[in-house]
Structure formats: C-alpha cells, structure tokens
Amino acid sequence: MTDDPFVTHRGLLFTVAYEMLGSAVDAEDVVQETWLRWTDVDQGEVRDPRAYLVRMVTRQALNRLRSVARRREDYVGEWLPEPLLTSPDVAEDVELAENVSIAMLTVLETLGPAERAVFVLHEVFDTPYPEIAAAVAKTPAAVRQIAHRARDHVAARRPRMQVDRAQQQEAVDKFLAAVATGDVQALVAVLAPDVVAVADGGGFAAAARKPIVGAAKVAHFLSRAARIPDFVTAPACFNGMPAIRIDVGGEVTAVSVVVEDGRISRIYAVRNPHKLGRLDTVAELRR
Image 1 (cartoon, one colour):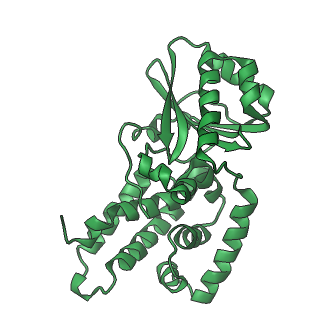
Image 2: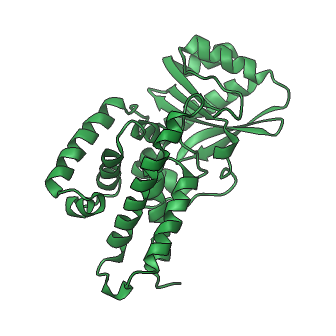
C-alpha cells in the first residue's frame, strides 16, 4: 500500500489523458509529466489531491493535444485511436466501456481541445463545473456552454451501440467466424446494410486509405483478406468491448466493432504497428 495520491490515482489519470488524446503513448507521456510536476508541489497544502491531479493532467493533456494537431493533419490515410487490451472489469462497467470505446474516441476526435476536455471531465468523470473551469482556465458559465455544445455534437455523431452484452457478443462471434472463413454470405448476414469499415495503417502497413461503405463491399474486402496465407483470427477485448485480433505472417490487426440492432455497423481496423504495442498488456482504465 502507498499513501502517495499520485500512485493511488494513476489509473484514473491515465484514463483521463487517454480519453483526451486517443493515444496511450501520448497519455503515458502526459502522466509522466504530471508526476514530475506533482513532486514539486507542497502536497501538504493540497486539500483534494484527486481533483488537483486531475486538473494537472488535464492541463498537460490539453497542451499535448494542441501540439499533436498538425501531426494528425499530416497523417497518411485515416487516423484511428490506439486500441488497448482491457480486463473484464472494464467491460462490466458499461458506461466506462462505452466512453473508452474506439467508436467514442473516434467521435471525440471531432471536438476541439477545450470541448473535448470539458466533455470528458463532465460526462465521463462527473467532474463539477467549477473544477473543470479551473482545469481549462475558463469561467464555470463558459464551461457550461461548452459542455452543452459538446454534448449535442457527440450525440449527433455517436453510434447507437448495442447495450445488451449477450447480443453484442453473439454478433461479434458470428462476425469472427465469418471473417475467419471468408464466407461472403455469412459476412453480409451479420453486417448492417450501411456498415462502414475504417482502416488505419499510418503509411506503415497496407490499409484502405478511405472508408469502405456497404455490406457487399465490406464483405468482399474481408473475404479476400481471409484468403491470405497464415491468416489467423482470435477473440479479444479492446477498450472494454468484444473485438478481434488478426495475425497474418507476424503482422497484427486490432479490429473493434460497433453492434447496432444485432448487426455490425462500424468496423475499426488498426494496422499501424506503432499503435499496437499494448495488445499483450492489460491497460489500467479507471474512473
């Protein structure tokens, strides 16, 4: 056991940073920067260490978010968040799992830095407006307005995800079986008619540069992939959701999906090897 608040809340701090950045690498850097600043603080004068640390990590994450904006603008192809291997306890926390899902993080990418910080702190971590105001250097009234805009923005773009976990798992299992065999008819049956598949190779791995839309096109694309030698699929749990790991000749693809009305409506395939370094270690995500 430790009395150091930073150690106690490290999982929370990482989760806040990851939600804001969509990158575990950047989130770890932000948490490390926060720790360095925390060691210089007169901790005896801090009345609420958790709130103080969340404020610190938010400010560092905002700085990092602004600095990586240009890097993402110049990214080759589609940019997707970095997937994380997660434990069953994350999946059991339905609200946390939905908020750290690849689908949600992809929507959060469409928010500005301040909007993203306010949304994450208030909607995910129930942080009071005055505390958020201190973290983002704005008035509580301004934060309320930002929160309202961010909620409307996210609500208009977030997929209507399957809440029933048994039905969600059933759909993913059918999808996994169809992907493993390359059965076009089985794929079409489990895909929503307007399914969208997005791949992220980052210029380091072969991947479609633009989203593939429609069940027939996505099914034929996946069936061709299944014919590649040494194509191996396995069930996984990424970002609190049922997912698929594909291994082909030493190259890994992390596939996350959205299930709506019993069918796969979104597919997110991350192939960029620089984003796949954490698939063998369970991430600590906390609220």
